[in-house]
Length: 445
Image (cartoon, rainbow, N blue to C red; front, side, top):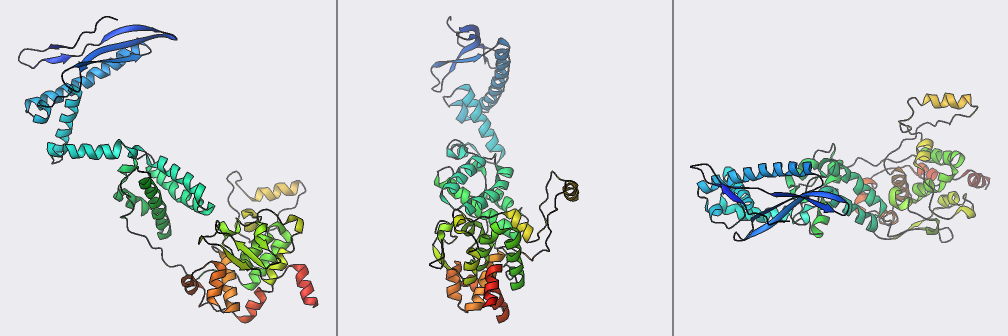
């Protein structure tokens, strides 16, 4: 390759000369074919020396297209710089910078003036930009959420991970492509309060606050945009929903007859009061000591992060003993589908089936029995746990002891359970709900 000429200056009469950008184009032979390259010299950052630049493309057409676009950009930069020089903007005229850098600074000054500022705030603006866009804050929200969820999955309870993932999904959908540092408190507030209910808003705030606290610890951002958003306090929940003794007996009877695999789950939830999401679904048969008469709730699955012992009542023991000893191993079986069925809940819509009635007709044609449909049992959130706590308190009249067994606080006991009135006959009926064989023996006595 020959020597590359430095830019020449040309210009019309009466107008300042403009450097003409004339890159040298050459074809190069490579190991896997040929390429086209443009070479040129331009003034370096020091303003004194020229530095060599080059651009290489696979074809001449691609290179010509790039050169044309580059010429347009350089012409635009030259125009901005000439205007700044004509105004005698000291920051441009005296700065020993390359033409492109001078053009960028001139454009920045013009933008600041239009916004009511001046060149004196340019340094601060550059520092802020570098801090928010050129460091760890270049990470986008969706990437930080992904990192955060991976850590939560490794270190926290499965229920916490599921809850965090569910509440952060809308954040990723709405703002996932934004830089973390550009997520402002105003944006956070708008997103949180866009939820439909106070409980959903509170959940969004907790999840967003956690993910941006995580980003601060990692050094991606300097402040948590959710910290200044006002807290959302959901309205106090109405009296907790519980099953009557008759409904509880009906539920256990259906399970015994039609879904025996679900009996341990229901019995422990109804007569032991474990939390369904993490404590009960994470329970193992090794945690059930029938001889000692206790169920161990381990710290890893406990919502309060502390282990506790739950006494096994006589009727709970009877239900657990219906499981053959050979099957008392591994986790406690759970099926949402079976639970919904025996509780008589509405079946969840299957998108692949337009008319559920067609299933029954098809089954009859093949000589199969249609599935039994049960009358609905009144249901509510954590109803098994609430039922046990209410009947246990009515049985013992000892709120501190029941709170300890259930992993409650006394404040929760006072708020939801202490003022509930349950008749003594109803209490006796509940704690005498037994499997069929045990009930027969009890009556025989």
